[in-house]
Length: 620
Image (tube, rainbow, N blue to C red):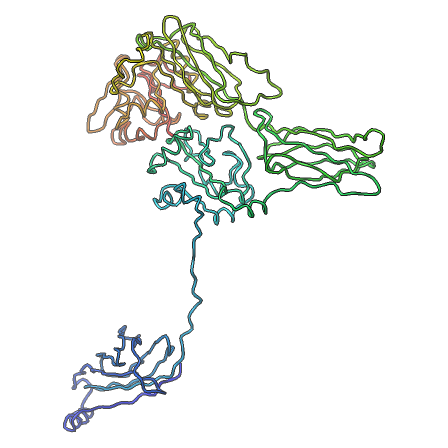
């Protein structure tokens, strides 16, 4: 920095100056150092105008001040030499050395204009599409619950980002297996439930926004949106908003246009066209990849690819009719079977005609319904109840599957009230149950792809009230026939929970709590839930509660398993490590099994520690 011109004025009286000069001859410690009162003024060197709002500082002393409107400033410093720094947006940064003797010092500092170099100003403007505004995307994002990806975030991701839950990019989801827990994740696209699990491929340019919620029920207002889509607000949910708000010009720019055969004077090309659909549901698969495997006359092989349009249609326009061609389709990481293609000559000419080949990809999987019928009044299972299942909405039948009976799928409950209807096309179904003595019940249930839906049917033998009868008391919602459907959690299926529950229903071996039942009971602690079991009581010594079976003899307390691992030994309960309530909160539990005696325990829970029975907790 260039030194600035500085003028010093010291209006100290002559007598004070003589005393000061005399003091110079004395030893240094003989004269006390006095603070220096500096009164300064900052002026423009060319015009002499005062410079206001300039920062005057002495870095070594960590002091600073701003000049007033008349350019003046005031500082108090110890006597000695000091480096002044002057900083102003229009004059840059300047430094000067000032010697400050004891007393009062008057400074006049003149500087030349020189603007401070300022880094380029960055302004971030967030474009908010009106469609995402209308659906509440940004309001929910402001709450800070969940993960949100707007168009800018999505444009930086891969292609495709979303092709269903199992194939969704980790950069979007970042939802580990531990987060998913026992509740099957669900996808909602533009407010509609994705019935087959992989309804469409959504490349990043097709998506407007993505929301990922581990616990949707905690987000105000989101539960109504999820329930309206027919899903469960207590399950991890991915909400996808497609770019419905794109302009017509933008949509046209991104539209896939199928090729057209080029005219040729030599030999007409082989043209192959068709559609790509899901093998089970018949749903068209837009933007599926179609590959042609070409074998030339000399045996050389090569591949050629094309992409289906938004209606699932594809076309190859320039294949050589002299080659052997086989085509297949890929979608969401899954591939269909190879379909051979042979050139067909037009009648009376040597030209080939377009070959039609429709391709299928096995995306959706069959769903299953398993249930049990009870008599609502007596609480007993109903045998020989007739179960009728019919498609609630028109759904295409698979080519490799016999259509259902004219009246739908039929089943009859066994002696324990159980029934099962396997191999259903994913979709919504109307389930009606009836028995001459127990009554009737009916409702619509969803059957997702690759999932088993548990249905509990409660029949009421009481005849329905006449149309003009008073409405039932709202305080007793359990009255009347009803059907409760819940999707089986895949991991509970893997660990054998549902098999043990069915076996227990026939042999009376245990007590089972599903997530739905836990929510209905709404316990504040796990011990509150466990005491619902007849024959189990709660003992709370040392402010730590433990479950005790009344059915097992000479037992102090029960063993506790968490996710199949013994965490509380029935033989040596450690109160210092806490009780059952310290393992998990009720809302964190997916299911609980309770066995009150050792003889009723399943084979995988028959350790010596379990002689008093066991409690198996599955977290989720």
